[in-house]
Image (tube, rainbow, N blue to C red; front, side, top):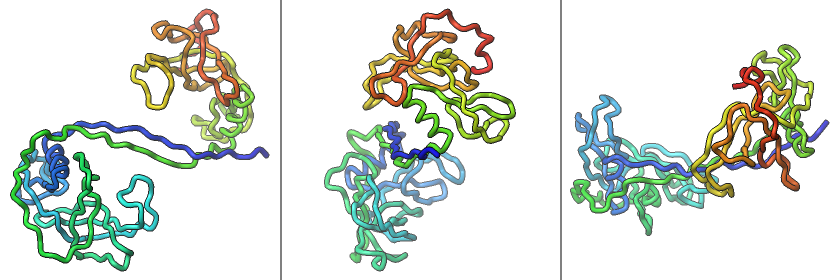
Length: 313
């Protein structure tokens, strides 16, 4: 029996969003060491603020400053902080109702251990030394036994407001492809494409999933397909991806390999991007030492007839 593969995998991308007037004021306030909430029609103060009342759906814009001190309403101890979390040493995640607010704000509490944390304890904001208009401008909360801090009465007006943020999204996990896809990956290392045939409907799936998505039965019979195939659909990419050394524009498409009943995706090159078309016949191009095709290029054959691939669109 072949060894089942596994490998660490990271999915990461920057999420860019613009800010409305309420979120813009909130984050700009953090930059200026001011915590702002928003007042609803029935007088409640929401922190962090939202642009629409969660009860009535009414638009709300009445900004109000709250204190940087507050009370822990609930908490959980984090024994092993992960990359990108507020503190590098063990800390508590806490919900804090700031003085003057009616809702709680989630953030980290710097405490020496779980025995030092309790519901009802008083805390205050510890501001980051360098602030840019983000939730990370609040470095964390810290225990506080002093008098309540009175808000200054800030109305939420600022010069040079923060109008947008970039939030990096990242997922780290271990990918284990399983028996079927391990066989597929091992075959790719030998410059072969191998799928599996369903014993019921007889369709060949590439990459194989170990079961037929139509019939729901297990698949085990390996079938070699390709190497050539037909472009069934494609898109032209005009935005350069970070850490991807490919000049835009380039084409990414779905390719139905000969003998397969499922199209796989791949980059199409060796032809001007505006000449790629549905029905184009292509073949894989391998680079030295690669475990998978670098891209697909035209074979020079006539385009495939529509009836030969219409079921794979």
